[in-house]
Amino acid sequence: MGLDSIELLMAYEEEFGVQFDNIDAENCSTPRHVVDYIYKRVRKTKDEACPSQVGFYKIRKILIETFNLKRNEISPSTELVSILGDNTKKNWKLLQDAIGADYFPSLERNKYLVLIVIYFLPIALFFVLLFNEFLLMVSLAILLVVMIFFNSITFNMARNIPKKYSTVASLVPFVGCDNDTIWEREQILTKVIQITSEQLGIAIEEIQEDSHFVEELGMD
Image (cartoon, rainbow, N blue to C red; front, side, top):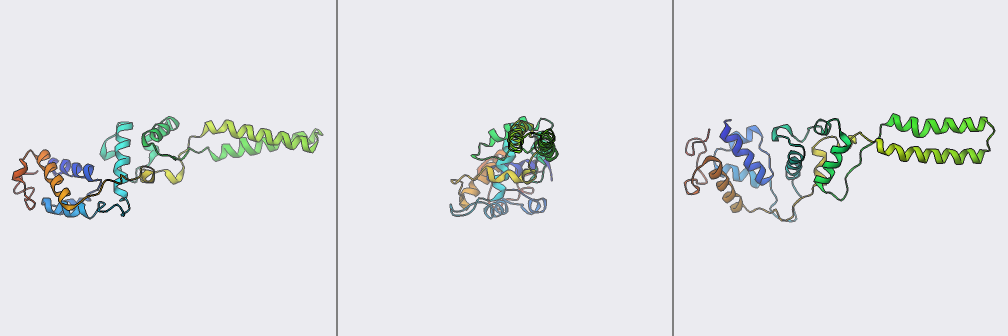
């Protein structure tokens, strides 16, 4: 695929929130093929569920703008840890603010940290108190207070991305879907021709539904 075709496909993807596989892209040799391909993958009524690809493109756009990334650096399977880098806590908060969802998962603490600090150390202290002949109820009260204290302070040590939300695709449910993005075929055709005209520098009136991108429109 030449540079013209790649940029054109990316413009279609950005506008309609769909993704062209390489084989599908090669088979789309006219605007008609493109329109038919897109029409099968967009919402045509408000009763239809939001296509997951729409959500992915919204997430991708957020990631590009928030972390200054390139489109080809982000796919549904991209691990978020590779995007957030070393400063996970700060960047997770940036991502949360950029998405703006009512609910967003919190980072998790290291499980070994939790076991040692919240459970092992307080329990060890509990037995030390008993060994030094503290009353059982007093020892239990101290144990509870210490566990609550350690639990609260270790929340600030949360740095791990939850496994359930480790990839770009896992964030799609948090962006929702624009309910007013409903497409009719004629709207898609008009938009496809307009985008084709802008990307290839060809007058709109010269582009027909069955114009061949390479042979008639001169696309690389």
